[in-house]
Every structure is written in C-alpha cells, then in structure tokens.
Image 1 (tube, rainbow, N blue to C red):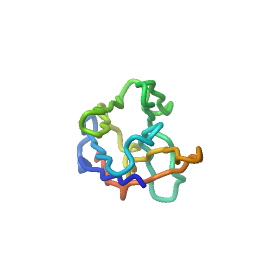
Image 2: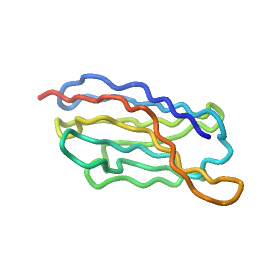
Image 3: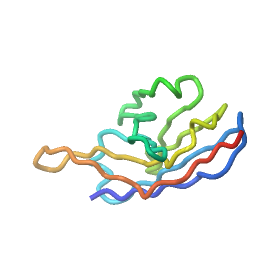
Image 4: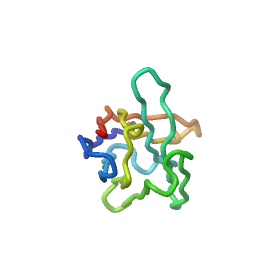
Length: 120
C-alpha cells in the first residue's frame, strides 16, 4: 500500500501563491504516476496536474501556465507551486498515486486532502 500526506494549504488572496506538498510512504517503488486533484463544493473531483516517474507532466486547462508540478524522488515528495491564484481555485486538493501491484494491476491511493481558499 501507498500512504500519502498533503500539506501546504491555506487562505490566500487573489493573485497570491501557495505550494502544496505530498509525502509518500509505503510501497514507493510501485508508484507509476503522482498527481493533484481538487474538488470544490458541489462539483466533481477534477484533475489538476500529474507527473510520471520519468518526469512527464500534464495539466488541466484551467491551471496551465499558473501551476507547476514537480517531484523529488530522493525525498519521496511531490510538490505543486500555485501562482496567480483565483477564487475559482478554491477547493480541497488531494494527492493521488497510481501504483502497480506485483501482479500487474493498477490501483489508486489518495491523501486526506488539504483546503485551499482564495479570497477576492
């Protein structure tokens, strides 16, 4: 199993910045892709950004050019730098890991979430 713990959320004003962190533990070697997802009240959870073991990244359209995902494999930690924050970025942000079992099956692991609130 993989355990994920997020940190770094908080309250920030329009145009401000935050950096989220996600520390992974457990079966680290089995992780294929790490990612950030978010869920605002009354909305479905959406992909924000993902990063593969090789460092390939993918971003949701609404955050391209403002958010940057990165990972430090030595520290088993993933980060997301969020700049130019907008009120519509307000949500609970979740860390996700897609891992592969020894039998070759993929499974998802989720963190507990961290609240990001952007005030106008």
